[in-house]
Every structure is written in C-alpha cells, then in structure tokens.
Image (cartoon, rainbow, N blue to C red; front, side, top):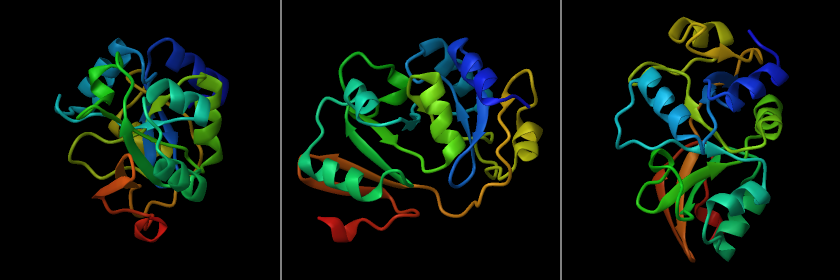
Length: 192
C-alpha cells in the first residue's frame, strides 16, 4: 500500500496504481503516456479496440483533451460533476489511440476525495478503468484489488471500502445532441 504522494510519483514513472472511486477501485496510469497505457492494457487483458475512460480535475484538463465543449456538455458538467457521469466528447487531435474512440474521449470528475486528490497530485488526466481483469467482478476494497494485481505489477492506494453500485452513466455529447451509451448511476434525460 502506498500514500498519495507515492501513488502520484508512480504514475509519473509510468506505473499502474489502483485507487478508490465513488463506485469501485480503478486503475490509474498517465492517460497521455502511450507506454503506460500499453502496460495497463496488458495487465487487464483488455482488447485493443476498447478504450479507457479518464478522470480529470476540471476545465483546464478538459480543454487539453477535448476539441469541442458544447453548451449541452457544459450544462451536464455543471449539474453532475463531480459525479458518476462520464461524458464522451470530441477529442483533440494527437491523443493516444487507447483513449480515443470514434473521435471522442470519455471524461469525468470523480466526487471521491482520494480519486480527485490523485488526479490533482498527478497533474495529468488518469485512466478510470475498473481494477479487475477483463470479465472479473470489480473490487470494492484495496485487498480485493491487490488480489487481482499484486505489487509490483500495480501499486495500491488504500481508501477503504468503496460503495459499489452502478457504474457511471456514459453519455456521448456532440453539439446539442446526447446519446446514452451506458445507463448507470446518473439519470440525465431530464436535463436537455
């Protein structure tokens, strides 16, 4: 188990860190580091065509990732961030292929204090994929995450037991159009 500073330093070195979120434990790497993204994909056994969603700290990181932030996206962010709403928004050119699907990048701001502190300490967007091998149940505790990915393959930032529940809602926003890609913890139909 590591503390916040050690976890942020590990991310800067291209290592994988398990951390608590508002639902389950997630796996973080620097979302802009191609080598770290490859390491994460191999560790999870994740198919190459599946991209990773990201945690950001706010608008500064968002504007570095997204080419267009529509008024609808701004309204959704104002109403649901921090929270379990992942927005799929048009990506800026030049981002790693592991975080871009159909020209878009998936981002959210976590309400979990330790997850948010990790993004801030890392100073970069981090991945927000669940801390389990593909096809296995996501972990709610640091020890469950360590059972899947024992150090040194992954460092563990222990934040206690997470609440579990539904994953984040995944909504693609292009201009003033929204498409729900995965219904999850947040209902967004009423905000249009």
